Image (cartoon, rainbow, N blue to C red; front, side, top):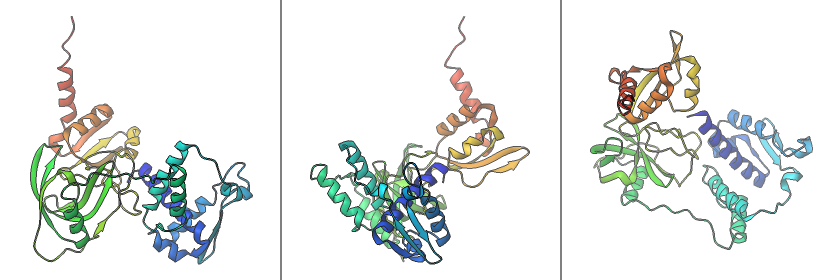
Length: 334
């Protein structure tokens, strides 16, 4: 998970925690941690950060009052933060959209204060709720049922990166919507690992007879995790769910190890890698998933001579070949 994605996930989760605490007033640490899928230690760390938030001039009376004991947490929103504010229509719509995103976070109370406030806001904005509907792919019900039951599927899948249809056996573990499309994360027998598939690109699917597999069995609500690296996954994942990595490689992704000059370390925050970087002979080596040659060519050309492919060997001349192909389009001028 990149630093940017991790920050977005933490912020949405923290706002959901504070909204719930504002409603209940006080709750045991273990209960809150379990509700929002955090360890007690991580929960306390997040709340300590929130206790520093407020409004100018940031004096103690203008900060959120969060009291953490050995076993409980209690909170009180400051008077300045509690004052009603008159919203413009555009601010109201933005607030309503954000509130719906918070309600999608695991552990949020769909019948709580935030939901009731959202109903009032919808009425103030014109009496009708805001709804974002996605056209459901034909095979979505089958895929969701398979995820919920731990059922394996035999699918015919069209890959946009290779422009071909492949036959695969998958065990769906999570179904979600993002950026206007439905996706399924599944254990793929062909790849031997977890892979992400766009549901509308599944041309055909049949249930495989046999005992259901043990799995997450999660068919999640639509979420908007934001833009990501696009390094080979079929889309960004369920960043609204704490603890779930928003990047999963696509069905045709390959592992590529590149060597970088330490000055190019900014790349570590720009693309999702398979693990931490390692130092080799004064350089930094990083392994990442690549969904197609074109993306890797663009990355290597952008980095220039400061980056080179270590593995696989057939990619080591990729940047030079791409540069030669581009230069061939521009004949020497006389």
